Image (cartoon, rainbow, N blue to C red; front, side, top):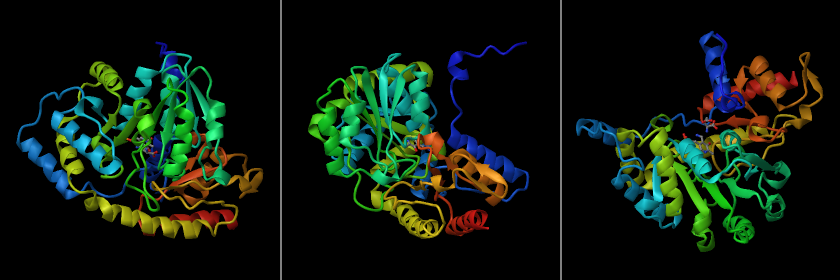
Length: 396
Ligand code: PMP
Ligand code: GLU
């Protein structure tokens, strides 16, 4: 029988971060000593106080369907979090809890984008943004920002990318994959462009807000004149080491929150009840309780930066947030290493996988074809070993 899949799925690319992680896992299971720097996933366990809250929820028999937009107690806790961390006022009707920030992003895109609308993607951008835009049959408009501009777009570039068809912009600071963080002043300069176009909405993906080593993260919606145009997206995966719990959320103008609830009500319903109860504790406890993870990431970042700077042909930025480095490795394009011709970042990443047994992700996945992404959410020992292997594969 022939397979008759829809054009929608046939045209959807596989998530390259997840694919590389799966390849690394597969090679490992074959006995090959792979070090994976491919996945953006904390290597910490979920903190005990959060796990305790989940166990209590099970014992208290939380087991039924939840309200589609999330328990009221959780939405209230998220409201307190927005006030405490972001100086943002969102009432519970403006908040929707979803099965990961990925679903939050997809909800927002699906309720705002019509086929043919344009969605601006400042590159480098996280892999799934482009795929989500394509699923909505909208058109991604990429704005390039290389390492020479700190992987940040300028107000002028933004202005030039806007057309009468622009509906949405995907914004992410601290950024995956570059680790770049926009300052309040830089955000204000972009906001000055956006307020002139009140029909354009901004998704502000702030999932790495606490994983920051220099400066502080600032929320786009905290500018009064951007509040009605902004959807603030966040989630527990990164800051609380809860990737598998699948909990994300938005704060948004109420009409957008309502639309997302309607969308989710037909696709997944409310998020898992135990994860939601645990999330109330995670968000209500002081942020100082997760500082030990950020401190460890900071040490790793400093360590890795020092090593990467010693690799010939790597141009690397001091990434102030998230847990990625995104070196420009275009020096190697057109060169032949160990008999293998490197034409682009994908070739380079595959070369590292084969010759150094280190898994990275090609910058092509993030709209930045000169770079590769390395995640340092793994132990210092493995990081040192991995970078040593990379260096050896490149200089010998
Ligand atoms: N946004 C960014 C920038 C990410 O890196 C990720 C990766 N996990 C997500 C959103 C989605 O996170 P989750 O679905 O695990 O909440
Ligand atoms: N966001 C993480 C990453 O970029 C997890 C993988 C994914 O969901 O794509 O690696």
